[in-house]
Image (tube, rainbow, N blue to C red):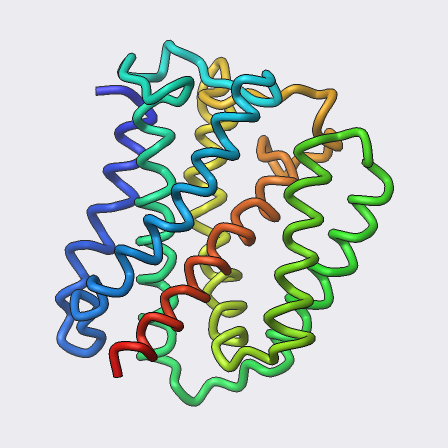
Length: 227
């Protein structure tokens, strides 16, 4: 089994096994979670495919199963299903176990940091496709959901995003070469800032934010429609 596949399976097993926890009952949300993930996954897979074809990033076959969907390894396609699933699990667990935690300041800090940093990085890296696309989208999403809509779920999302950075760093760190001679996923230096946290390009944190906030938005929207 490929290294990338092992990471995907490891990311999925824990949250799925704990989905039947009596306090959270995460499995009861599957009917609204699955379409939320699939809609966002489709968009990001198209984005991923385009950037792969443009050699903005790519994949090391030494760490893959050899099964592809277009230009994308099947493990990469699975990433857009499994990672949002695990992160929404964290989102619901934190809501269930910390219902009285004050998150207003946390939400403001995350929104202002993402917006300000995203603007700075975008303006100073207009020629870098990955930097520009990931950061501009993060800015627009933050403005819409926090500053304009004042979405009631944003503070819980911000808390979950911060907590999810820990497992994200472990998984993405391995993918970007933290523990291997060569990275599983490589990036064109012409389209990133070159600033990395351990081995992870800073843009990945904005990209992850983009994906997860969209899943959370649809997740909460579909939950309301089921009421």
